[in-house]
Amino acid sequence: MGKILTVIAALSILVPSAWLHAKTEPVDYVSTLVGTHSKRELSTGNTYPAIVLPWGMNFWTPQTGKMGDGWTYTYSADKIRGFKQTHQPSPWMNDYGQFAIMPVTGKAVFNQDERASWFSHKAEKATPYYYRAYLADHDVVTEITPTEARLCSVSHFLKMTALLS
Image 1 (cartoon, one colour):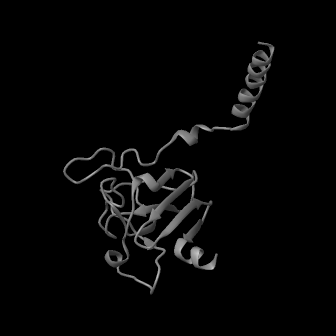
Image 2 (cartoon, rainbow, N blue to C red; image 1 turned 180 degrees about the vertical axis):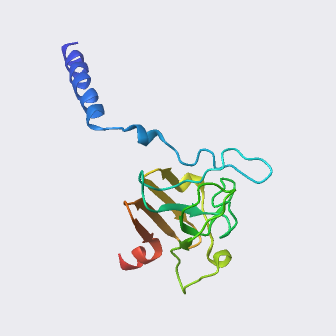
């Protein structure tokens, strides 16, 4: 009985201290995918998962819609066409000065329909300060985080990693 009480006492000290070390900020509860299930006929937010710092110079977002369409990202889409630098405040106001980058394998592909890659929301993480997605057609994991005026992006080319290992 004494050993059980000792174990319970030790756990009551260790478990709360582990919770204290894992800092959770309010921003960690934000999902930028909320409000992205929109279409022209019915809108449920008209938002896109912006990856940006407060007062940041550039907004970055995964792009599922066609360039110039206005609907940059819709939750029902299953292909990412690129990662877009945007100034777009709403789908009703189109964008200006936009461009997209896309990690691909093989030869360079500039046509957004040809380079698009299937993705799943199960392998997607979207917060205001970080975005990650697995691009299945290219076997690439892309991570994006913003700076005040730039983008910090890393793409993990999984086939290449396996070949080099």
